[in-house]
Every structure is written in structure tokens, then in C-alpha cells.
Length: 240
View 1 (cartoon, one colour):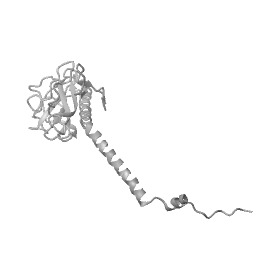
View 2: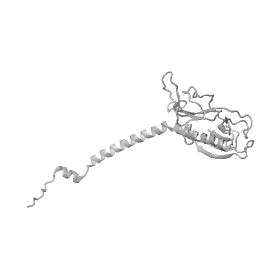
View 3: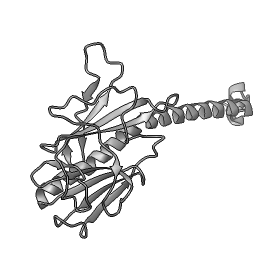
View 4: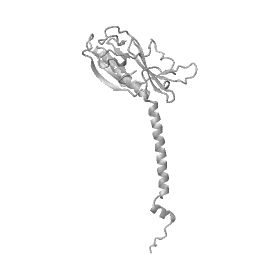
């Protein structure tokens, strides 16, 4: 004879049938909200921390493309860091001696200067990275080139022989141009003091070879240790 199943329902059975109470649901939702807010806070802080490095790597991509094009196309390729329009430009100069056939290859927007600064060295960064040959800080001058005329621009022109020259003094770039290395400082201003860097990066370009390198600034390096560290990072176009 089959035993009749007990009709007695335990407290646990009733609870399972009833589901979660409103208080329990509110507690769970509160925990999820707090964890989501904390995650977004740390994600935003992480993104802010690396904005300077992201911008430096973007500029390096443009510089590396300019270097490779100048060597393979046997032409002068110009890079302009324009802080008036807040862009970086890649331009093929084509025929030497004239600016009439200068051809823009691409133009990329830079972050707003309040987020990432490129036009000077931060007050709390006392020197440039220690390269094997002189790499003075980039000079932002009034441009004489079409497309950026009268804007404040740092100009680097990659030559077919691997060297780097500056803008020169006329639109054709064939007067007064000299070979020179460059250090471009890329840094995120400190929230409490906008003239100091919270995160510091620098790009060096050797005038004699066109070699490009990304450096990290370590303000808290121990005494006797270098503050500038070679990042060993690579760009889209290979080693920097």
C-alpha cells in the first residue's frame, strides 16, 4: 500500500514558494549599486591616469609613419603638433622647393590641454630624458606652412636620409632649416596644481637618425636612480 504524501508544509517550503521579500531585494539592489559605482570610479581614475600615455603613443604612431614614409618614398614627410587647432598632422611635402603640392595624409585630434598638455615641460619635471645626443624641448612657433599658417606649431620634418630638420623660415621649408633632435613632453596636469604633472611622458626624436623613443617619468625614484625610464613600448609601426 502506497504511503500518502504528507500535506504538512515546512517554513522553508513556504519561504521558497513565496520568493524573496522586498527587504531582501532592496538589500541586494543596494549592494549591486554600490559595487557598480565603485567599479566606475576606479575605471574612470584608471583612464585618467593613462590619458597622457595614450596620447603619447598616438603621436608616436604618426611620427613612426612619417619616418617610414620618408625612407620608402624618398620624400620629406612633415609632422605638425598644432596646439592652436589642437591636432597632430601628417603631411607629404612631395616636390622640394614648393609648398603648392603639400598633401595632407591624416589629421588626428589631441585631447584638450586641461586633460593632456604637450606644449611645454611641467614645472616638477626638471630635465629632459638622457638621450645619446642632444634632444632639446620642442619649440612651438608661428607656422609658415599652408593649413597651419600663424598657428602655434612644433614642426618635425623627416628626410629621406633618415635625419630630422625643423620648419625652416619659409613655406617651402628650404630656407633656414636645421637638423635637430626633439623632446616632446606629454603630461597630465595635477588637479591641485595645473603647472605640475600628475603623469609625465616624453617622446624623444634623434635628429641624426630619426630614432623615436617613449619615456616614463618617475618623480619618486630613489636617490641615485634615474627619473626618466625607457618605456620599451612599441607602436603600430614597430619598436620605438
